[in-house]
Image (cartoon, rainbow, N blue to C red; front, side, top):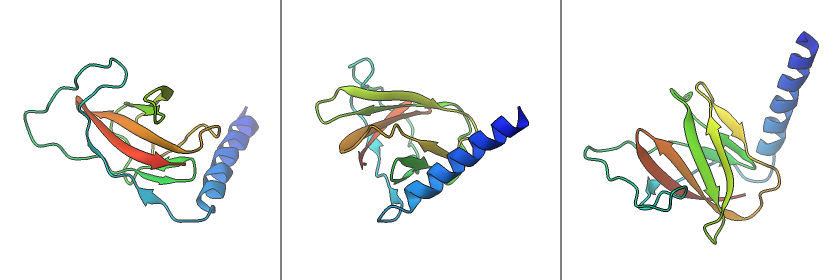
Length: 124
């Protein structure tokens, strides 16, 4: 069991290192408040207090966070037509996340933090 866990950890580490060795450097994703919730299609709630935009970087297929996630954070990726191509939850304590390797092109990343929906464009 320990060997299997160690093998899985090394595989994830290797995938992360391999992705960051692709041409270019990690790029920060520029987020704005989203007007639409991509899951429900309804208008996203407008916060009544100032919000702090999330800080997320992308390198290849890896999302990186400068600080560990303090809570579970749902996210959605949509293609240029607005179709959801990926939905997942970043677990508490996450500092990086490997996106599906089948994704290639321009997408919109939606992150749900503190009751707000933030969106930013990513190119994989």
